[in-house]
Length: 147
Image (cartoon, rainbow, N blue to C red; front, side, top):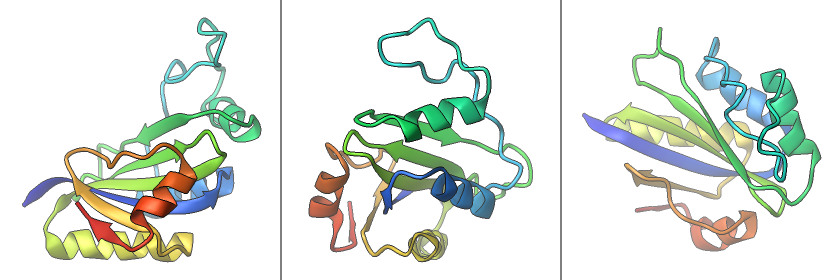
């Protein structure tokens, strides 16, 4: 059993539809984010009223960098956690963090690439890979690598 397998895939332009597609595919009935999970830049005291308002704020405003992670504690044998990294160049990198083996890793990585219609991705262990923005992710991981 390998813990904390992280499959990251480039999803193109940031989009709520894409985030919802990944969430509903891999973690239906996921746990909603705490409303203080993120704040508006320059207005740290503002608390979003709903998860939708929070996510939409980062989708609708340009030049922001924010990562969200969703968990699901029941009916989740591979312990899937979905991540959405909105980059400052308005791109989206989606991730799945799972527990499993090489077969599980390959299955989820391929499924994530397929639903995102992307061949740009990377698998890492324990920590997500580092990149500056969406273009940097494409440059570094455009050849389907593992770290």
